[in-house]
Each structure stands twice: as structure tokens, then as C-alpha cells.
Length: 536
Image (cartoon, rainbow, N blue to C red; front, side, top):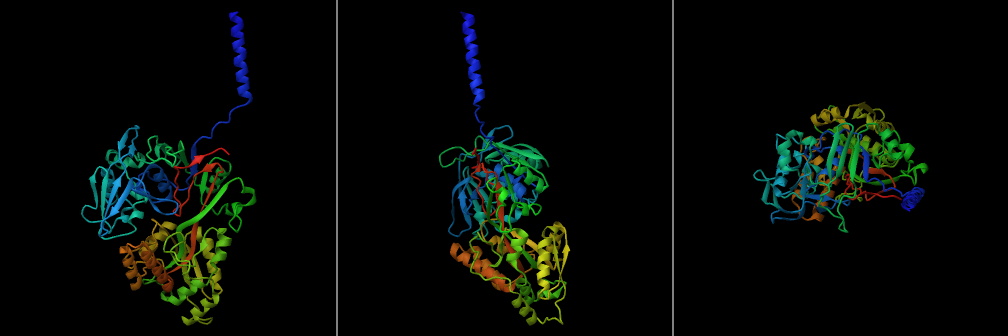
């Protein structure tokens, strides 16, 4: 009888296994978000987060006092609320008491105002030599700018009211680090980051891959009360070949890719900027305004070619080429023609009603005639310096300007060398771009303030009315009035033409259809705390 029972038991087990094998359950998708970063990552210390590669990683590992949402609005983060003093020079922040650092051993440490004061003071410490020190230079009080009033009350003291300060505090440079951990690791904090962000570092093989795991004690929850993040981890690879990385994405080996490289743009997008038919339904493409204005700049302080000091010649160049065709044929409609000033769309202060420079060759010829030039008295040849990445755009402009009698000679210069020449005032005419650092138009207008050196004022532009408006805007607490000042300053830039605005850039991103909750904003920041990988 015992043998019969055993036999029946085996038969039942075999039947159950067979049934299970015949209708296998679909495994849940692995919650690891993979993306490639073409540029190298040099440090995980947010005090050195000066480029996209380091900013994206820092956003996963650290928090800031406040953060910017997809609409560029300032939102609470570590600071749950704040108030300004009557004179606008002191901001008191009230911190959350449930934010913790997680060190390399998984041990928790409460984040307090001491860590906040230390993190921000560290930014301006000459011994640290952070490239982000400029965010507070000339803005915070000389004595006790950062004060820990109590465990969860922090005070920031300014020299004078400065309305963009809240946006600055959302920058990755201003991430809050663990004072104990920085003092423990010293310079090696670059590879041993201790933050309070949604993820924590697991492994970094420099130049190869970086792995971050979910912070199980992360403080943020979603609207339903569920703990964030949803993902179990993030894997970053560092393949310099953008075409190969795109192939990996198409083959399903990456969840996401940002940007459109010239090596495959026509393969992916039509000239109208839409996905080619063979990619439709297979990948998701999203576009958004990007706080980046591409331009050509004139050196207005002792250029070797004095013709560039002639405002009419500068305006003739502005009118002498078709920006719309340039965007359509050379950039597959990624970007918008910069015909409304320097401030890009997406920022308060951008003025769609401001009439900038459109394509008007007849007006360009008329301006050249007023400047004293003609078919028998040609404009002296002008040298335009650019990096190889923008060679096609510059050749396009060169050909169109030749039709109105302006001869350009294009010289290729390595990007770092060109920036050095621009800083020293050794480049008369150069291609450049300006990417906003925080959600306030002041970050663009500072490029033309006469009191600023190069950078940011590479053109050496100095205009009394512009400078007056700039200083008024800095202390104006009424947003509408401040934005009106910004629009008037942008008008001064058009009136004086120290630059040639080319286009307002756009973010273009590609993701797999199963990626949900990936939000965009005009800074092209990567925020993964609310991302899910969902089976269709």
C-alpha cells in the first residue's frame, strides 16, 4: 500500500510539473534601466558635476535643497519650505527630518543642516577648486553665508537680493553631501560618493560601466504612498561610438538614448523631423525645448578685423542666410530658428513678439551699401572659427553670405583651443553656444553684462542701457516686472547685434515602448526615480 501511495505521489508531482511546463509564467521584466554615455565620467563628486555625464549620475545619487520639475518650477526637496527676509538677503530653509545618507556599509546617517552648510561652503573652498564655485561668487555674504541654525533649519545669507538664487540651489553643484564621508574619503570621495538620492553606487569601472542600486531607505513616495524609486537599479555604459550605441538601443540592449548624431540622423528622422517609417511603433521619440542657444559671436574689443566693429555689417550678416532651411536640411528640423532674440523658448522672458533677424538678403545688401561697401569696394574677408562638429552649418552660412558680397573663410579649431582663444579675446568671429544653468533668463543675459569677464562675456559687449536693466532685474522681486526687464535687454542685443543667433536647440530622446514615467525638461536632465519598465 505504501508503494502505491508513493507511486501516486510521483505521478501527481509529474502531472503538476508537466502542467507548469506546458503553460510557463511570463517572467516580470528586470527593473534595471540601461543607458549609454558617450563622454567620459571623471568624478562622482557633485562639486565637479560640470557636464551631462556627471550631472545625470549625480541626480540619481544626491538631492538638493530644492528641485526643478518638468515645467521649470521650483519644488521642495530636502527643504520642505522656506521664507525670505523683508530685505530679500536672507533665506531660511526648513529641512525634512526623514532624509538619510547611506554609506558604503549600508549604514544610515541623518542629513542635517550641518551637512547642508558644509556642502555649500565646500563649493567655494579654494582647496576644493570646484568648477561650480562661480554659482555663489559675488552673491553670498562675505561673513557666514551658510549657517546651520539648528538640526533642521538652515540659513543662506546674500550680499544683495538675487532672485535667481532658488534656481541655482537646484543645480547639481549644490547637491548635499555627507560631511562625515567627505572628511573620511577626502579626494577619494570622487569614487566613494555618499548621498541621499534614490540610488546608491554599487560599482564603477572607470571608462567601462557604472552600476547604481535602489536606495531601500529613500525618503520620497509617490502620490499613492508607494516608496520611490520603482527601479531596482541603473546601469551606465561608456561607448564613445554613438552609432554603435544607437544600434545597441535598436536591438533592445539599452532602454534610452539621448541626442541625435549626424552619423545616423537621416536613417532615423525625415527632413521634417519625424521618425522614419521603419522605426514608427518600435521606438518612442520625444522632443522638447532645450535651454541652449547656438550663435556666432563677434569680438567687439580690439578685433584684428576692424570691419566687425561696424554694426551695419554685423546686421547684414544676420540677415544674410536662411535659418529655417539650415534647420530643415542640416538638422532634420531639430531646433527652431533663432529669430526672437537670445533667450530661448521655455524661459520666462523669451519674447515671441520680438522681431529679430530673419532671412532678408535685400536688406542685408542695403545695410552693406550704407556701411560703404559695394561690388567695387568689397567687405574685407572675415575669418570664422569653429569646431569640426559645426563645419556643415558654417559652410552653409558661408555660401549664402557670398551671394550678398560677404566672404567668409572658415578655420577649424579644436573645441578646447577655441574656448581658450575666445576667453583671451584672440578670436574675432567664433561659433559658440550657451546652455542655461538654472531656470531664469538671467543665466542667458549674464553673457552680455559689461561687468562680466570672458567667460561668460566672450563678445566683450558693453552697453550702458543693458547694464542698467540687468542690475535692476537682479533686485526686482516682482516676477512680471523682472521678466519685462529681461525682454528689454534681449531687445538691446538685437539692436546692437554683438552676436548672430542661429537656432534654439531642442532635446530629442528615444526610449523603448516599455519605459514609463520618464519625464523631460528643458535642461535635458535625467530623472529616474519615477521610471518603471512595464511589460506591454
